[in-house]
Image (cartoon, rainbow, N blue to C red):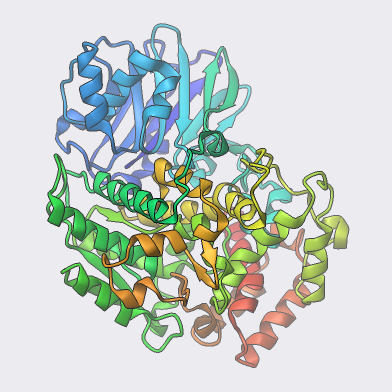
Length: 612
């Protein structure tokens, strides 16, 4: 994993070295192990790269990388986990290799297959390839948008980078705020990341499963991946369905243990992360493969002593099962204000809570020199974790936006009346302009996909949450929070083979009789602690926000609300917001519901003040 950036001056004037150096410097945290730049012959195009060395950490993996014949140049962020298999196939076609890196395999794959290479990749990536012969630039993101790629196009230049704040602070892009997006984020923090728009008017997002060409100053965007078109046939017998899931999941974990540096996992004690670490242990016992990291016994556990979302006992049980000695990171009241400005800046977007816990646990990985973490992201949205009875309030908040949006007719683009009624009824409707202040819902990736006629409401809802709303937002957060410390996150549950297979399963394989992730739980029988495998309680990996807002964050919140931020005042009626926050704080009545509704306003005000 790395940070990538590029500048193309469309009028042919040369890119100044200081411009690409500044853009590259703004993503330096993503790649602490090296940097590089490359200019084309006319010098109107420049690539910048910050390196997080995982596969072939020698100079052989250095980027920007040029193909052996000098025609193609790549900057790339991500991992292609099946690079060894692809390398062997390409060698039979006559390809030769100078390094042991997956980056060079991508270059050879491009020369052999062109755009068709994307469908052959099993991994997560954002990449840019320049053709020195045709003067064409190709960019692409992985199937589900795990790795980020933002860009800006004007009459003067095309600029891209791994993070929106890099573009906004580069001096190369108009950093004006997109007011409609800002308003939409306040109503629905999960309704933006699946779109092409961002908080900044000129910054666009290349959506997951999309690629683009820059030819003759014009951008052409195309969707190369549609999950619903790749659904496989599934076994008719339930036992066979479970066996196939187990096979796919174990192979997904095994592939993601390929690394030339130490790897580990962030262990919460829930089903997803516990299944991952137990599958890692099973893979070692079955026999490690080529390039697998033997230095994998690293589990990092965030604990919240006295808080409602502390799962330390379950995490200890999972670690003991996998024969791993965990590292515990206690997060308490004193951490509420610790590094708060940096955490908010690193997350660089509006969310339903302060992501201190994730930021701190990835910082601990960096301190322990563990570069890669295999985590459980994607399983919730894939198999219905938010639908269970007794789920935590935090997860009900996370799910509410996606659930409401899924019930609104797609043709209703003007005003989301259902959402407005809900917010108004709950008494937390703070946007200026009343109903007229509610912007249209943004088009989201995959929301118009034609799904199988036999699918019920659950499968349709999960498809949308996975591709369009909830999961894209979670992926964005964890990319930024991990890469803030130069940590690569790998996600076995998001292996495209496992995703398409699970999507194709009947709803009863996902949720039945109050149990979620049915097929996964059955597949992990005897492979993980039974108490965790069958547990129904769902706890989010969140900071203890109610406890913090009722206590140590109270002063910070009051000071923030007293600040004059004109851009925020233009879109928010601050008097009732201030009254509501003051009442909740005075009564010590912050809970997960109020956090989920109101924190986005506090987060937005902080961000707009930062960019003022």
